[in-house]
Image 1 (cartoon, chains in turn purple, red):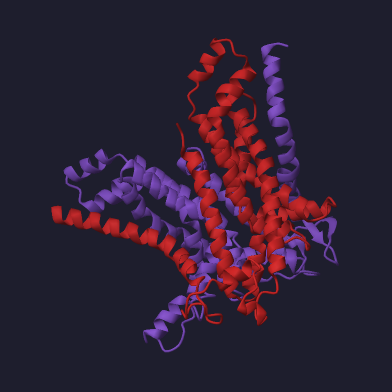
Image 2: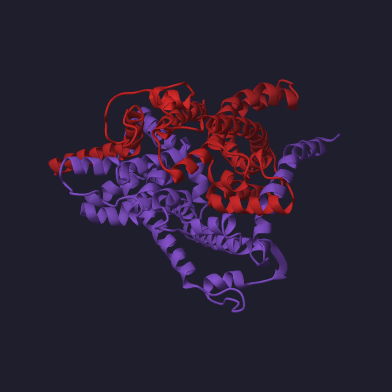
Length: 300
Length: 276
């Protein structure tokens, strides 16, 4: 055997099984989901094999008037989810950005320890971390206990099952996602440029807007993308902290699959999330002109 | 100017202190209150007890004798067992597959490398729910019965990515002169791989495996869609308990899960970061 053909054999051995696995169980299902979103829902929960674009019509406003009606509620829920996801991005950024500057200037050892402390929660159970917020925010929760017993309020405040609770919970959960890319760009920041700007007479605020912010923008953009996308499709946070009162797109998708059993419509809803994801990824790649920031951040 | 500067630095430090407080105080709260004896109002402290832990672990306690609480210790233990079986199987599969892709991408040249990279990063970005329903549609259409098998297959699709990322980071940062030296000294490729590459790669592989294990144990969304009706995992059990109403036992379960994840993830992160 020649060296080249032996290398090819080794490569096939390495990649063959895993490629087959991913083709069948990862790319396959995604393709089937795309197809399903264009099929008609069957009468008893199944799927009918006819081309049926009205699943999207039900969301976007060109519904098939015979069976399905256009209901602006879907687009309203979608927009609310976009709003909540955007506010989550903003909140995580406000929480992480200043901290990143502080941690970037610590000694190597403390730096690594801080990064460890920030990544650690990512590997603890999501449901447990949300449950903690239920205990803190609910009617008989910690905050209300403290407020009531100190006499600051007469009766418990409605903290849980609000939009604010969802944003708080998401922020808590997505901190590591935002912190890592932001930190990566803050750490690389060339401080001689900042000093030059100050020396040349620009004030601290102007230096921030003209030097620091543009130089750390790639990290902010990367963090925004990898927080926004999972936040948009999230269904656990709103299920736990939003209750039945504040519904997000993820809950709608879940309902179509597990309660309403209209799979094609559910798949169409999921496609909306996927298309937002693709648009954001393309925009991000085009705008930043570099490899996916998610890749860089996660490969750390 | 100097005062302004030190004020700014102090402010930044205080902010960072608050940042860590925000992350860890909630976890500390639950750890403390899991020992609260108050069975009705969990956030009003009435005394210290280890009752809830005993309860969860299936010991007889005063409370369980008065039959107020957990009727479901059996279910809980079953859920824990399911989670462990799933995590062990997925970790084994995902570690082999993820490492294979990483080695292929970093030690071979071939057409389609970019494509593999994109596929590896897709599960990280995609909302879990999308992959969950895609797998559900797939499994139901292909007639595979939902249960342990489907959960294991489904989780592997995204755990491979995690192992891949950890192992490939190590491969990218590895000093290749040792490999060349080994080859120059007459070792064949397999020898070089086994005696030089693998030992250097080993901490990353174990680290990746531990992280995959813990992520598998914690996965809720994807598992939730493809579990079917017969199988419940630990996160699913807690999720349904939360929906039915909160009991103090959940505190104890939550704290035990947190401690377990902390230990395993710390080990995994330590092994991942041990670059040299």
